[in-house]
Amino acid sequence: MRSVLLLILAGALVAQSPKYGVGRAPTADEVRQWSISVAPDGTGLPQGSGTAAAGRRIFADRCARCHGAEGRGGDSGALVGGRGTLNSSKPLRTVGSYWPFATSVWDYVNRAMPFDRPGTLKPGEVYALTAYLLFLNGIVPENAPMDSRSLPRVQMPNRNGFVRDPRPDVPVSGAGRRTTPRPNRSR
Image (tube, rainbow, N blue to C red; front, top):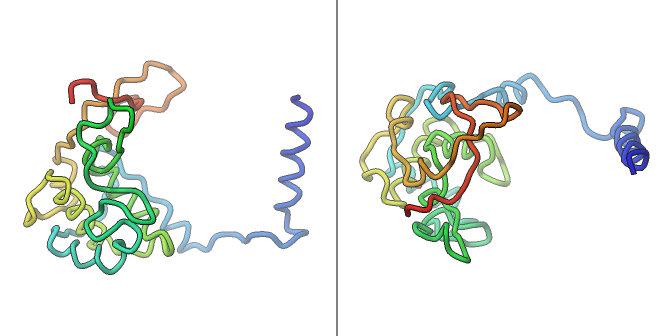
């Protein structure tokens, strides 16, 4: 079995070689875009700010076609709702029900959205979208400014729904914890 895996891996490496002209080296700008790490305590967040009011307009233009007009789902998954469902037979993992840190929401939106053009949003747009998602989930008021200082202070509903992972091979997060997701039984 091990030799079969090695053959498959070797075949994949050969297929990616320059000989076949597959892929390309990333540009310096692409590396710079990907070279950001945001910790739960906010370390790594860039300058900028935004509110849910500004995020509403950006969401309508850039996100609603996939996530629905108010983030309740469309072609892509729901971003809103789901509180109290994590222990049910049909858990709905959304920003408001599952994510433990608001900084993780910012990081994901920054890296992966919009789906058809990931990494194209400016930091202020990402703060505004994050504020809007938090507002839609009833976590922050609509006029609350989100920035590198306020975002890490947001208390997410499932913040304590993850347990410390004692395995030594699991990396410690930026907040100094090893965490593994689990449903929060108290919700």
